[in-house]
Image (cartoon, rainbow, N blue to C red; front, side):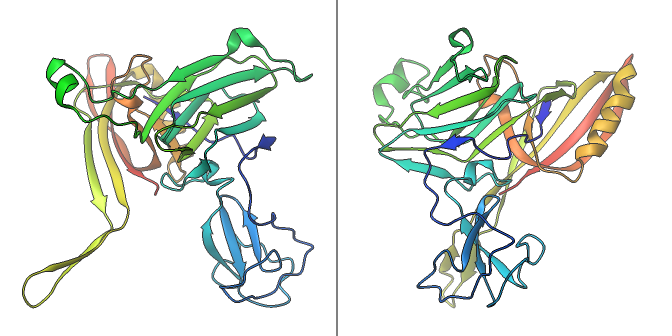
Length: 308
């Protein structure tokens, strides 16, 4: 298992449109009716648009004055794929998503909740010259559920994908260009999250990874027992074990402590030929502890919940 902490803070270029301007601490914002919002009252900060709750609103960072002087309104399409939420999506209708960012120390990329035909990852030097030998193209099959002749004959044809993938990349170049190709049948491309950073190894994942779910929907029965269901998000809960050498225990313990209260990308199966979509979870540690000792190895028990 590895984890990746987000190191992409912004895009150099992006073809995702932004409806409102970035927050500016020197601008005075006002309160406007929800039906007529404009750049005078709405800003983009992080992966969200924020609405001003007051007039004469200047110098008040929305992140520090949330629900006092600003309210988080809705995801920003241009930056939703960079925020700390799995289920907020960046979407381009009838077009590819194309973004560029500084590579820095990034050696791994994780994509989640994808709707795409393929992903192209390109490396460029500081003079904006393409380094073609490091280009990677990942194609997604439309036959994701076909495993044998029976399923080939009877499985419904579909191009719908909502999946994830982990991609180790070269350390070459100054910037990275990612193209998420349009899925023709859906007439759009979309991405729930794009995480780029250094892959930190936390041991080998043992078999029997447990997935469960936490639904935030409500179900209220009436006098006749009929259920009124209000559908909301469903959260992934993941439990698994990793095994490490005893000598690695102090380093692993420090790494766990560093990210204990942070949202990072967990790649539970980092193998290149993973049939489990690398078991990606963008989330937070609920619990991590040494649960057993086997000869010269230590076993660490992990419990993770998804950030939605």
